[in-house]
Image (cartoon, rainbow, N blue to C red; front, side, top):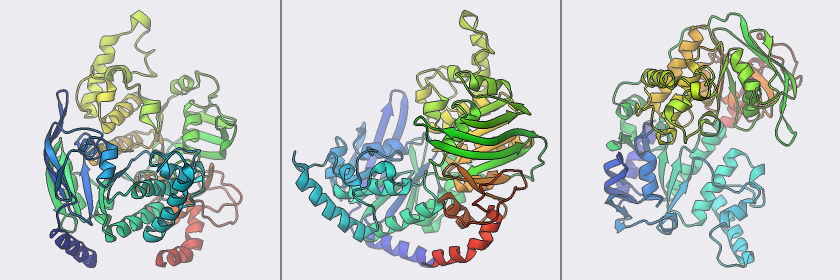
Length: 557
């Protein structure tokens, strides 16, 4: 650690002799009455990794959107490599050497890697020479930065980690010397995140400048040289990473001390409230995405499902919640088998005592053109009457109570939901589902894109529901979240449960390997929770022991 701190300090001292890669002076930006950026001053040294952290709505994305040309600042100046510039759009930003890798990839799934890389950067109407040049450049970029990816592979056939490399390649191909990465590890396995960090360090060591927007303070501490903290549209402080701590950063972000570790006592499991047996779920093309999955969740416990996005978690949650038909198998809530078939499947499950916080709040959890109070009763509106008999006063009153309890900002039930930040939109969904006092709560990606203060609050609410005797099924791509909240962990890969673990003893490396589909064959058998595992897979407790020599070997390479 001391060596890393020393090298980081040396980089900053060397960079200080050069003009900053980016310098923002007095940046202001308002959207109507909302001041998103207030007199922002920021200096990013060349050849460093600079982190930007802050709560949802702190103004990080707005600031980076100004730098990348999506927005124009109301006032203030931007300097690139010591020269004042006026960035009019993203093409202009790229011409100045600024590239951006978005949280949600901007790739065409049925195009090849090389076609995505040249898309929008063609030299002429004749693609042959462009593709030939791009192939040579991709080969060199792969060699220089460890960005290996098959140029002829279809995007839809690549892992999420490989798709992210394509996004970085796109920016580098267009000549970017300054890379902005927005929440880059949100959908990566631990191994993929580690590989990304190695790539970023190589890029930095070759003179590239990296601006990293992330909510994960561990990543800030691991990869950045400096970190800037924003709060409520202002720049609070910029620190040398080696001279700060996660606790200090969290306090600067939120304005108070933040509990970084989840505090929870031991679980006291009761009766089985959710039972899934031999469940098979197919997608819209008839392909099985969930394959003979069985497990159960008891009152007073949290069962976490770990896995890389795209391995059947979404289809599993949709089938259990009634959003998707169950192909085979059964789902029981409170001992009652509930069919999800038909448009009213979700309503039947809600009536049986199940609530659902979907993975994608914008696509599945909210109607952003509706007002906050209208979203707060979605799915439960029948309990407020119907048609002209809808008790609007009651709905608004209860929405206001939830706003206060869940600290939803701004505290305005008459505001369109689209005008709330991502973290506050998530709180609207959580409040709607949790405050219905369900027996079973299934939660998908509870803190995706959510800041540290809101994460703390959401985790406390989930633990409180467990302690109140509710059965909770948690799905998250965040391994730290799964390990800290869960009382038991199931690992899902390619639609099957491939392992089970006690979070108190589970090894992150072995869990990561299972999430990536690397496991040993062995004897089958029932787990302690009667969750049936596929015959070709051992429970993770045995896998941890058997895999430990290989894990050590892999880590040493």
